Image (tube, rainbow, N blue to C red; front, side, top):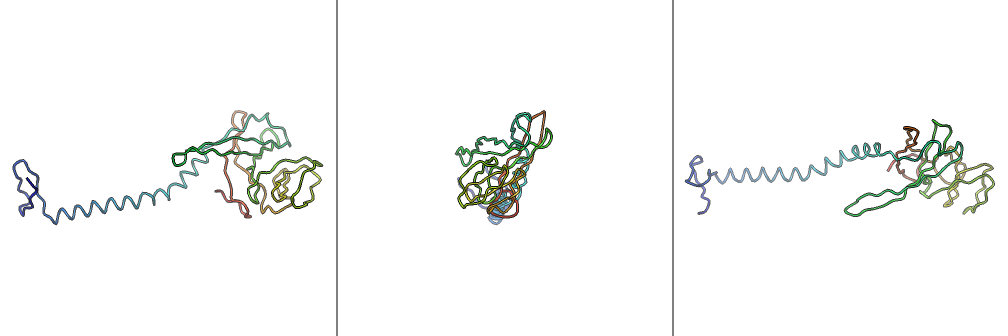
Amino acid sequence: MGLEWKKDKGKVEPGGLNHISRRQFLSYATLGLGAIISALIATPLVGSLVSPLVQKKKAEAEWRELGKIEDFKAGKPKIVQWTTAKLEGGVMETAPRAVWVIKKDDDDFTVFNSRCTHLNCAYSWKLKGESHQTAYGSAMPDKDHFFCPCHDGIFDLDGAVLGGPPPRPLDTLPVKIDDGRLFTSYRDFRAGIPEKVEI
């Protein structure tokens, strides 16, 4: 027994359905299809608008413990390294992370992202008079300093540029102390530009 289209809208066949006109059916089908298409278009749009807010809050909430405050010596930079793991598209991706910690006193710390602001190369701490190879023959400062071997970027203990092509000082990260332990919220920044822009 097939579905019959009737002009009588309110008439019910025994054991059958309320019959609707062809015009009503097409109207309902068009509205339903329009709602589905609208939802498909709106979902990524809303996601793209809300995602940066969620990501920023998530990044702010992700504090990484770096150690006890007594593990750091005043005026002596210490590198802290770890590996992060993130599930991306069904694949577990790992990424090495590192920061340089400078303790000024028990309540005053600076934490630098471990990447040079020129081209994101890793840099290291060099003591005054310590010999090291320079790629471009840069003159070494007569004091302890951070040195990036990629293009002879040189920074002082406070992260200020002393030499080479870096366009800005080393990038600082947020710091907090809780129950005698030091924490930072790790972020990466765009390299090669004068402004500090988080990526």
